[in-house]
Image 1 (cartoon, rainbow, N blue to C red):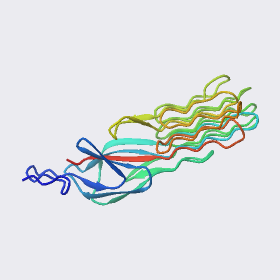
Image 2 (cartoon, rainbow, N blue to C red):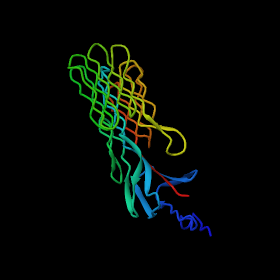
Image 3 (cartoon, one colour):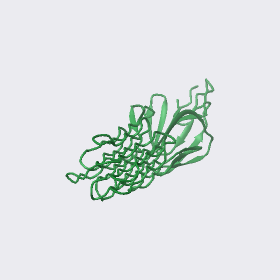
Image 4 (cartoon, one colour):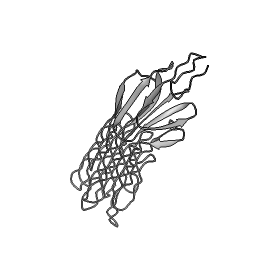
Length: 280
């Protein structure tokens, strides 16, 4: 006799047992349940299946873009939050805390996202820009972009531990900073005439459709609009026309855009955790 898979999660005839769990927003993709966590909560395993493993995607909060200065030497774009994904993570019957990292504010690193033993590191902050002094991008899941400068030492982008490095800021008679790194691509370097776009993120189909996460933030500049990377990275602001930088997309882990003026850089986007397992 076949016992309902929705109540007991197993078939008596075959002896196969399926995992049952609660928490987050639950959807069904074929024979799999998908738990999506957009905010901090708990993944509660009530029944352990014959296959006691799950697939996961853990994305941290993106770093904030940095401030520039009144002369238009732009701040670096924020680095994307770290992105970790894999199959075969063993679970047990227990409650797992799921932490969703918030995006960093202006020139601040993003916050870590955590599930079980998996910790994705927050994105690196962008480096501030200035005519005489500037700052390197911060390290993180992906590195933040370096600030632009006229007379100071050329800045470098931050190092990405779970993504890509940020781009370097330009040193010279220009105001273009470096773009933040993305999960799938380094941030572009600022140059005399171009650059500073955020690095692209990485696509995942864990939810049943392809979605790109963890794009780097675009740099701030004097006159050029620097785009954020695909996957939620925000575009950089610019001095000319007083264009404001754009924040990273919520629950995508994108870096915030750097400012092209003395106003604040944009915030990074918050992270996300997605867990998938066979339930029938």
